[in-house]
Amino acid sequence: MTLAPYAAREDRSRGRRHPEAPPQGRGEFQRDRDRIVHSSAFRRLEYKTQVFVSHEGDLYRNRLTHSLEVAQIVRSLARGLQLNEDLSEAIALAHDLGHTPFGHAGQDALDDCMKAWGGFEHNAQSLRVVDELEDKYAEFPGLNLSFETREGILKHCSLARAATLGDVGERFIAGRQPGLEAQLTNIADQIAYNNHDIDDGLRAGILSIEQLLEVPLFARFHGEVTARYGALTPRQLRHETIRRMINALVIDLHGETARRLASANLPDIEAVRSHPEPLVAFSDTMRRDNRDLKRFLYEHLYRHHAVYRVMHKARRIVRELFEALFGDLRLLPPGFQAAALNADDDAGRARVVADYVAGMTDRYAQDEHARLYDLKQLR
Ligand code: MG
Image 1 (cartoon, protein in one colour):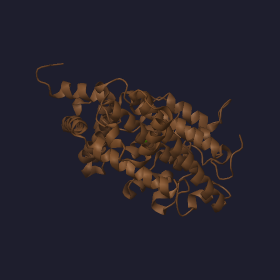
Image 2 (cartoon, protein in one colour):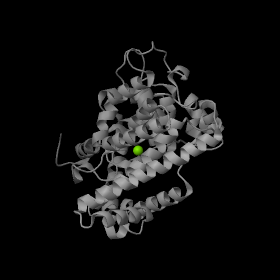
Image 3 (cartoon, rainbow, N blue to C red):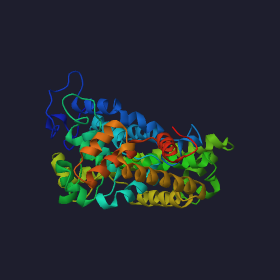
């Protein structure tokens, strides 16, 4: 497979933090992907929520299936644009590794708890997982991934945090772009969650087809499907509509990005990084459609009272876990306890507690909360 000149290339990689001999029988970015898939943080994604808490039903998306969907979307886009497919896949599989239990509700609660000590950002936490927290290689902490994979994982972060992150933080301060594979994964993430959230929302009975007809993109393909097939089961109708939406978004993104790349005429990835704006983008029409879709989901799904109620409780679980553990570090399990007791100050101790809480699955967080607070069960 020929790579475009502006694609990320292994032979011009900015390398790993701890130098290693080149891999045999696979490339550098394939090695990154393999390390990600073998990490414990990756396995835990299965029990972490996107929107619906895992006990609500086994068929809803979790962060593992979400990450696989992102990887699948980004790989076909990368291949079509002659970008680095292996790198795109590695970034996609790792992009949510730092997510807390209970999706954004958990992240917001932990961010509040950490206010005095620099806050908590899930993107920065994904990087922290692969750089430091995975602990099983003899020669280095974390997974020692390539710069390009780490660059892609850190989609956004505050300027204050960027200043503490070394090489991967520089671009936020300098106002530079990440490589195209990172840009592509960022949008593939949105394509995946917007569409699977519609699917899950419909199956949960929280969204209805009638409501969704106010979203132009949905209405267009819903019309196309009913005109073509007439009566379908709700499942067929849902799926036939959503697969067309995903396809339309992917094709539009491919077309607009290819057009921008052709007119920018970039010699290499450094030119991508110093380009004044991202090169991976939807056309204007699709950007508007996508924005309407997002807005709809905010209003009707993420803020729906049934979803909100669960998330309200989830925030409380995360907050109370943090309070109990930070209040008495002896409640932490041995590894985290040692790290917290060795920390120099409150900021260091709070960060260890945040690492521990962020690593929990939804289920584990609920159980641990019960173990700490439920006085009827002494265990
Ligand atoms: Mg994601």
